[in-house]
Each structure stands twice: as structure tokens, then as C-alpha cells.
Image 1 (cartoon, helix red, strand yellow):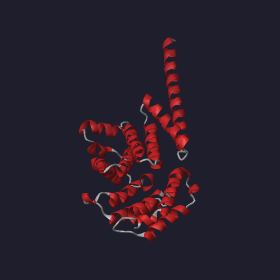
Image 2 (cartoon, one colour):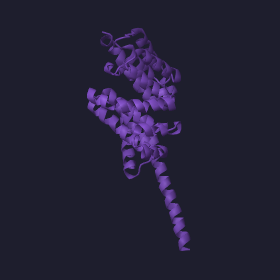
Image 3 (spheres, helix red, strand yellow):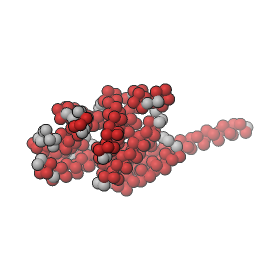
Image 4 (spheres, one colour):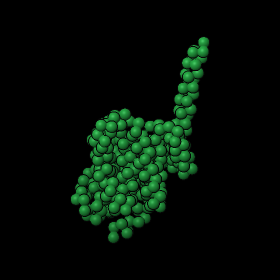
Length: 273
């Protein structure tokens, strides 16, 4: 009888823990859905941080990494922005630590560049958000810090490109579109032609994900070797004319994109000097 009661108690306790964890993740998911509201995003981050301090959960770590990415995108102060992106990298790495194929490969290879080759499309989300946060950090970091992470940024995104190019609305094409336009010329990799090719692929994959068109206008159209004001305005006008209520799952990102488009339009005179 005691043994049966003990087994019953363990089963009930386990179910209670799972129920509590699922309830917590549902709350995080609900808050993240309203990430364009600062208070909701801050509460989401706080709940994620609290949860991960107790136990690393893949889904919670992903939500935290995405939340810091979004917060970094919305921040104006550069140092604060950089801090948010680094926290997003850290959260993404926590998610990666729950991918068995990756951790097994790391135990053997000891090098991330080799270990990430074990990550398949099914587990690309964790790698993607590490790469996304690190890339945004590199964009705004001082030159020395930018170069320090360049190699890692590149091999992470190279793996996303060959594994899941359409993930997150063609996110890898947004990255490489910006990369080939903005990478320091001293590296020998700056290439506006490749930049345009990547942005065109990104727009083709998900024309309703407006950030692609904003980056296209900002990074490619204003490039010193391009200066295409007509395309710049065409892309931004398409962004501003879009009815973003049609795509509620990316409403926050599209709202940010429209705000950026307004700012770029307002500053175009100095961008095309």
C-alpha cells in the first residue's frame, strides 16, 4: 500500500510540475504576442529570466532570446542596445544547450564551428536566434568588437543558409543582404550586387515581412556605389502602405518596420548627399 501511494504521489507531483511549467510557458507566449507593448515585453523577459534561473527550458530560452532581440531593435541608446543583443545571444546559447545533437558534437569537437554542422532544420531555431542577436550586436558595436565576432557571425549564418534559408520569413537573406552591403570594405567581402540578390530572395520568400524591405532600402539603396533613391522610396512606400493587421503573428515586427520606414523617409536627404 505504501509503495502504491508513493508511486501515486510521484505521478501526481510530476503532473503538477508539468502543468505549472506549461502554464508558465503559456503566460510567456501570451505576453510575447504583445511584445510591441513595452510593459508586456518587460514582463515577458522577467518571467523568462525567473523560469530559466530555476531550470533551463528550450522554449523559454527561445522566447527570451527573441524578446531581447525585439527589445534591442526598439532601443535608441546604442550601449543599451548592445547589452540587449548580448543577452539575446546568451539566451539563445541556453536553448542550444538543450539540443542533444549539438551538445554531443561539442563534446567531441570542442569547437562550435564544427559542432553546429550537427544542427538540422528541426533544431535551427536556437542557432538562428544566437546568430540574429550576434549579427545585430556586430552591426552596432565599435569596429574592434565588430571584427572580433565577424568570424562567428559568418559561420553561424552560413549554416542557417544551407539548412533553413526560409526560416523566420527568409531571415538569412535579410542578414546576407545587409552583410554584403555593410561589411567593412577592408574585409574584401563588401559586394552590393550580392546584397541586392539576397534582398530580392528575401522579399520573394515573404513580401509581407516588411523588415526585409526596410533593410533593403537602408543598406543597399543608400550604399555609396548604388545610391538608388527611386528604389529606396518604392520599397519604403510599399512598407508604409501595407495593412499590417493582416499578419497578426508578426504585427509587432511590421509595426517597427513601418516606424523605421517613416524615419528613413524623413532623413533621406542626408542619406543621399
